[in-house]
Length: 260
Image (cartoon, rainbow, N blue to C red; front, side):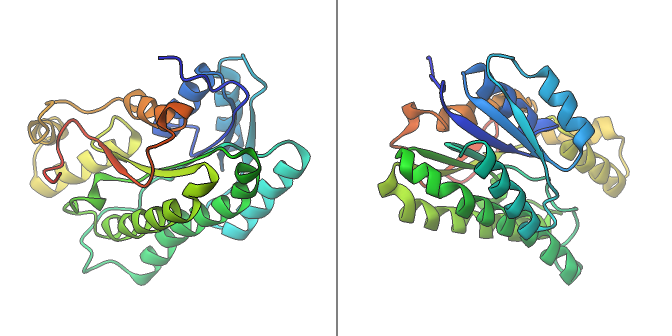
């Protein structure tokens, strides 16, 4: 299927590693002009140099701990270059641990990075999307919005808030040709998964290999996802082919989530 993203501009958050980086490549391969956004400029430059050079890709250096600064940088970029048809909200998850013992600052930090930053980006990008009658907002969240995950208390809480924000936004923006959807990764081969496996290993007193195997056994597919598998789902949702898909939570988890 040709997704035909030629003449579409995409802003991809957290795009120097994992799912974000794979998504940047997938969008570029389908013809989109991609602007990367992350906080590490050296990693941004390296990712930019590796992108398919079928379009003039670019990057923005921004720290997602400061929503107002993020908004200013993106607004300045738009004023000098172009708006965006596609926004992929993707930020690394909060540290693990029981929700009962979580400190208040952990909630504050996660809420800022995940919901506030998503929100200011949407407010900044949507005016252009409305003029184009085309917008695709895809939030990379977690299967925890359907089934909370043990040992990820703060993440479960904040991801649920983002999912509800997203559904509300989908209802408000649908009439402008803008869709808002969530992709829910299961266990995916990223640095985040490595951290989770280490924590499980330490908690259970088993090797990391044994902890990883136990996690795989809980997945009907009996394996972890590759970041590219998430990227393909995101890229489809970013295309015109997905124009009537709006306000959904799409698990990409090998069947692990037990709810419908």
